[in-house]
Amino acid sequence: MVPTLIGKVMGASENVGQGPPPHSRERARELVLGLQDEICNELESLDGGQSFRTDSWERPEGGGGRSKVMREGRVFEQGGVNFSEVHGEELPPSILNQRPEAKGHPWFATGTSMVLHPRNPYVPTIHLNYRYFEAGPVWWFGGGADLTPFYPYLEDARHFHRVHKQACDTVGPELHKVFKPWCDEYFYLKHRGETRGVGGIFYDYQDGSGVLYKGQNPEGPAAQVSRELGPHPKSWEQLFELAKACGKAFLPAYVPIVEKRQEQAYGDRERQFQLYRRGRYAEFNLVWDRGTIFGLQTNGRTESILMSLPPLARWEYGYAAPADSREALLTDLFTRPQNWFEDSTLEERCRPHQAVD
Image (cartoon, rainbow, N blue to C red):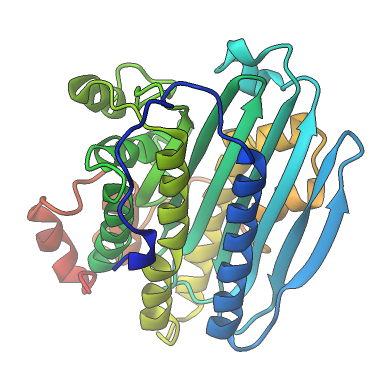
């Protein structure tokens, strides 16, 4: 369950669509910095072998951040949790293409991002990012989390989605209906024709206007659901609570999966397939991920930006998973958008491979 401290969010106020409240930057900064500390403390306890190394850095153009990296842990082969707070005079093209009204305004951005690459192939890789932008009168929240298993289990995928749906529902029951398919759309390798994993939630440019989907595919499922739902204006306070709820959903969504899978025995076959699929993860981060592009375009800290890459990966020309194998189940079922809660055929397809629970 999502922690009850999230509380019930008040209804949309008359501030919807207006500028940010006083101390907005400080509050956003404290939120994401607190998430970094909370998550790292829990992950160190979970790993039980290594601690995070902390590096603080400054950006010459303005701002800086704090990177926490774990290497060669008992559970996590490599993982990093970043915090950044940066500002400048002109937003890069990757942002202005989406929000041209921010052009000409000094900007501020703060956020936390995380990628964990577990050692055991049965423990999924995970990514999280929550962020806040201001540029003059323009402001918005964005974020999400997604799960990338190598040897997947249906109940793990359902649990991850269930916890994030509960987090979204604390602010509005309509949100998950858009943010889930938006995640499937965003974490999609166009050149491979597959999703990066089983998805989760993703949202961006949430500014109180009420338009839920602001992605790049106006004909996709997320855009269609958003149009059917119509506008759902949210105040700055509501969107702040959304970021808090979803950020705090990470630990209850992921830790039980790690605890369940971390001791499963595996061999060289499973390790080699994990490394092969890590190659797909690297492809997405280097080719398609807007966070990577934004960081490099704004002269962010390269070590922190590329921290998301796995410590080891491999590529194999023309690889095809053996027919009717666990590897084929991943590529045929778990790298395609699914209705994880209502499609009864998923259990039928997973059960022969002992991949339900």
